[in-house]
Image (cartoon, rainbow over all chains, first blue to last red; front, side, top):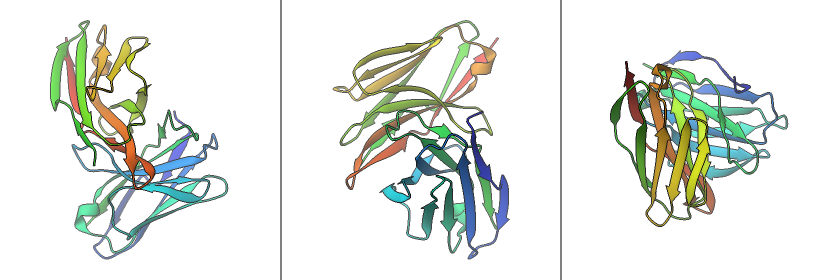
Amino acid sequence: ETGVTQSPTHLIKTRGQQVTLRCSSQSGHNTVSWYQQALGQGPQFIFQYYREEENGRGNFPPRFSGLQFPNYSSELNVNALELDDSALYLCATGGQSQETQYFGPGTRLLVL
Amino acid sequence: GQNIDQPTEMTATEGAIVQINCTYQTSGFNGLFWYQQHAGEAPTFLSYNVLDGLEEKGRFSSFLSRSKGYSYLLLKELQMKDSASYLCAVRGTSGGSYIPTFGRGTSLIVHP
């Protein structure tokens, strides 16, 4: 148990819709990162938040956006969903040094 | 950009030793991580190397050579439960921020 929770666990959407995924950490880690993991691939870094500000972004379009709240919980928003957005979405929390990241169980998104 | 290369699949016998290699190219190296991921689960942190040398933690050890862009994860006294995907991840700089890049993972199959 990492103490990191994500909701929902599974989600089915259709093309063009919008989705919000959530992540929270019991330990109060102030850094949260979001990843997209397609089947058979390693996680791909979407972005990272530190103290409510984005401080790093991977190669994802602007329709992927996020928020981090004062209690360090976080949201990932994806607009105008595409079929290729179907994947496991992972959040990971850690301290400022980021030597260790604790992953949540993930949200499995299917876009039809 | 960053590039990570690790073998796709390896097999080993219970009780044996296995070494999983990872080579990387990155700018602004700031640490290398190994994670274990069982099928359908989130990655769990195994090790972090930022300086050259060997880090030992129980049955698992991780080695880093920054000049060669090379790391390995060594698993001793293999158990059936070690069957999983092992992910190598490197943190480097991009656009002024530290960005982690994951390899595709090495699927390890441990047989009796």
